[in-house]
Amino acid sequence: KVTSDCQDDVTCTKRFTVTAAPAVVLTCAVDETVAACQSQDEVNAAFATWLGTASYTGGCGAELTNNNTGAPDACGGFVDVTFKVTSDCQDDVTCTKRFTVTADEVPPTCPDLDNDMLTCLEEIPCPSDVVDMVQAGATDNCPGPITAMLMSDTGQPQCVDGAFSRTYTVKIIDACDN
Image 1 (cartoon, helix red, strand yellow):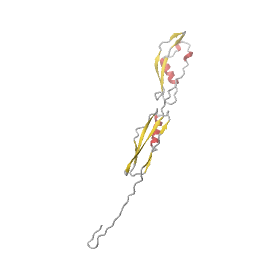
Image 2 (tube, one colour):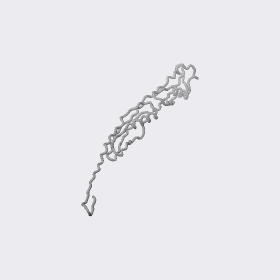
Image 3 (cartoon, rainbow, N blue to C red):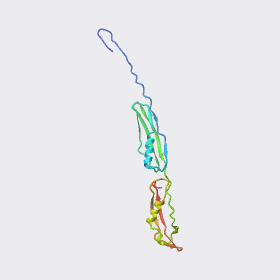
């Protein structure tokens, strides 16, 4: 409004319209399951790629975040991740999805040491040699170390029915404690 002593007041009105921001549309990652027998680095990389599949459009001053605390263990497990878009002009939009690593539940296989053919008492291996032979010959469905441990030993060979015998019990476990 403009006022003057020499004429009537002059009034002008202008209207400014701010168009509403488009609504936030969150495209969540999809639940994903990856195979067992991967290294932790491979699982971490797959998980990071999966996190990157979430996206959004719309909003004003919007930001996409998630509550990820890290990939699941390579031996198996899952994590639930909540994705959230915050916007200056709308309530938060969220979704929760799961990333799963299939559990490795297959134990390693013990090798056949074929010690039935020993002909002398002196050929019976000592406990540490047996553990080494089992560890060297054991196989597993997944890559990674196999550990062999002596659990029991009957001690010095005993003569039974004209043959000498000594029994060792060796436990083997893989990287996933199978």
